[in-house]
Length: 371
Image (tube, rainbow, N blue to C red; front, side, top):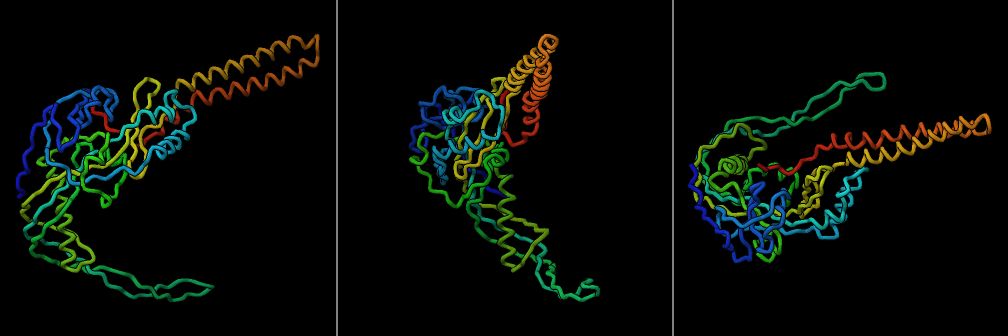
């Protein structure tokens, strides 16, 4: 059994936790909640860009976070990241520019829980111990059979059981319902590079408030605590491998703290004027999000090319009419006809390319939580 998680409190809309100059803001569209400087009142939500932030009370643990991973990606590096991301798109929406992405960039920290626990109980498992087996294999080489010596590593499995009394520290547990999606977009972080939480490291960034409180996150934490316990038991048994690990334990002295991870969010508007959200890992620079082409611009370009093709074909027709009066006009009209036909075929490319490109865009996207 696990001890109940420590209680939460209601942070009113004008309260500032942790000695910071910040207050809770909510997005009326996606219902995410952030801690941010009061100057951010009315700005677009960093993660949906469809609602404007407004003050609201929120339920949260007001204990100061334990760790924070600082930003390492600088503003000049961001510009280079955006340039590389955009460069692969031939026909982009007019709003999809490096300048727009850069101007709309918002730094944000998103949360994990760190949980410590005493684990006291009984365990059992099958422990695997490696050993080597020597054998020979017949191979046909240079017209005759030869025996080749080979050594294989196999595992011997034996049952093991025992008791465990151990303390595990800093098990990372999701603090957001959309944790898997967020992690898919940002990729991995090196948590060992974290620093103790310091409001000065937050600067003007947003802090996303967990929507999984500790009591809700414990079912996700328990398997991770058990995994840490299994590694301890495997080490105690001097096993090379384990399987069918089972643990009956009490989990006591649970201690929950927050860990904040850095990312940048930005956006551009697609053909329909809808914001498309991009996420940049604030440490590695990995960028994810929809990289869409513009069907409208493609059709516009195709129309311009088609008009040019029509002009060539019209000149071809005029040349054919003048052939009886000016015989060389026949040769010119044939050339213009071929040019017009080729240009007309080329007009198909920008018309169909954006749709084909967009259908292939299967990169992860920020979870939509609009109503």
